Amino acid sequence: MAIKAKPTFSLKDELFNKQSVAQLADNIHAKASNFEHKSFQQQVLARFPELQLKQRIAWLATTLDTHPPEGFPIAVALLEAALPAPLDRDLNDDDFGKYIWQVPGE
Image 1 (cartoon, rainbow, N blue to C red):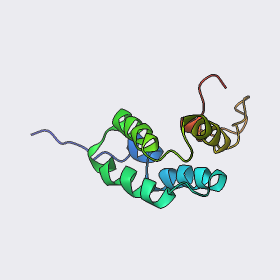
Image 2: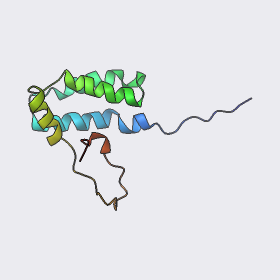
Image 3: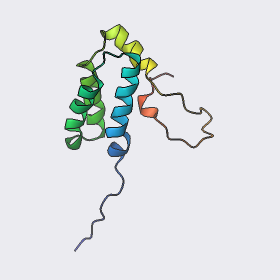
Image 4: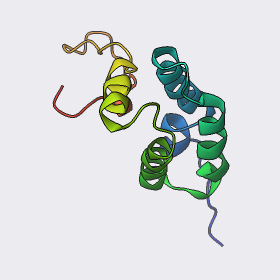
């Protein structure tokens, strides 16, 4: 009989959860007050239990596309403005951080 340990850590739940979605939604709402952040959060989180890590990333992107604040060019600018502060590039702070919101190339 094999004994299976219960998983104690879930990367998908650690990175993409109620708190991280709320932070993203609140950051966007702070830059665009007409962004319906509560409805965005509800829509995203409704499917999270059934989704794996990459699926959550795709679902976030899909849901953002259905909640554009002002059209694509303005939405892109708002998303960039809503990013958290950059991490310590020398990694002196040992912070895993919110890299997940980082724009590629920065």
